[in-house]
Structure formats: structure tokens, C-alpha cells
Image (cartoon, each protein chain N blue to C red):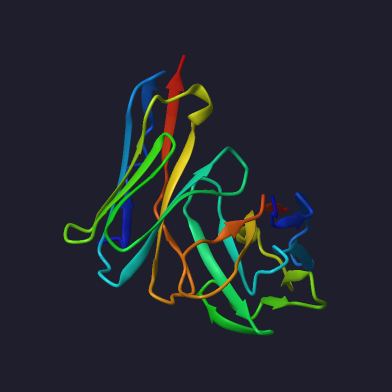
Length: 114
Length: 111
């Protein structure tokens, strides 16, 4: 069964360092997302991406964050200068088309900022 | 009022019981309603997906949506210890870009 894959599964970094989280969405999906879940809290929307541009972003997704689809398969989330409060699970998700809520998530990348 | 409310539990039931999980919401624009299952430190796994009001059944799982009451439910029949997880409700608007999640209900099924 097709799945969303994410790397790394866990990354530990020092505050102020840049981090890149990588995702390979399901191959025929066209809409890509990043969500975040701080330990013990809700899953929160960060950003959506379609046709090589951001279609929507949340208040959390400030200038420290960026997304990119560098080739036909990868989708990345970059955090330029990590803060302690960026520690969370980051989930990549994809769906095939608009007008549907069927969003499929990866297993997540756990980011720990020290 | 929170956009999506969900009792965090934990809900503890014996094996074989019928489980009822639910969420309420305030945004009448929501049209898509999902239930996800999440094991500890794993990604959300889509269980059920419903558009607008009505019921949907898939094996031991039944999802119900009552838009007039802004209330959705997930029923699990013949619950198993392997059903022990956190159950997240999530909702989206028509052609909406994002899902809005509930806080999740922790379910423990005891053998």
C-alpha cells in the first residue's frame, strides 16, 4: 500500500541550528502538507503546498520556516534557526485532489531542540 | 469556544465492549469529517472519512455525523486490545486546505 515516508525519524539539534525534514509523498498525490504536534498537544496545521507554491499557511509558519519541492518526489520543511519551542513531531501529509478530506500522514519526524 | 472539542479521556473498556467516541464542533462550514487512530509517537492513520451528514460503516467501525447538532461519533464494536490508541477527530471545509483536529481521546481496551 502506498505510503508517505519521512526522514529522519528523530533529529536532535542545538538551538539556532538549521534543520531540514524530508518527506516523500504518495506518488500520484498533488497536495502536500506539514503538520506539527507538540508533545501532549493537538495536531496543528503548518502549511499546504500545491503546484510548487504555498497555498495556505498558519500563524505558526513564520519566516523561520520554508518548504520546497526540489524534485518530483521530495517535499522538505526547513527551519532556519531552531528554537526550543520548535521541539515537536512534524508530520508530512498528502492527498490526491482538492474537495476531499482524505489526507494521508507519514510516521513523523521527531525534532528535539536543545 | 474551541473550534473542535474532544474529551481527552482516558476511556478504559473491557475487551469486546462497544466503544463510543465523539467530538463537537462550532464551525458550520465543516463538510468533511475524519477519524484517525494514532499510536504513541506514530503518525495519524486514517480510519474513517465522511462527507456531510450520515453514517458510514467499515468492518467494526461506524462513523456518524449529525451536522444539525455539530456532533460526530465513532463507534467501535467488539473492541480489541489492539484498538488501544489515541483517536483523533478531524474536520475540513469544502475545498478547504487544512484539517482541524480535536485533542484526541485515549482509549484503553483491557483483555
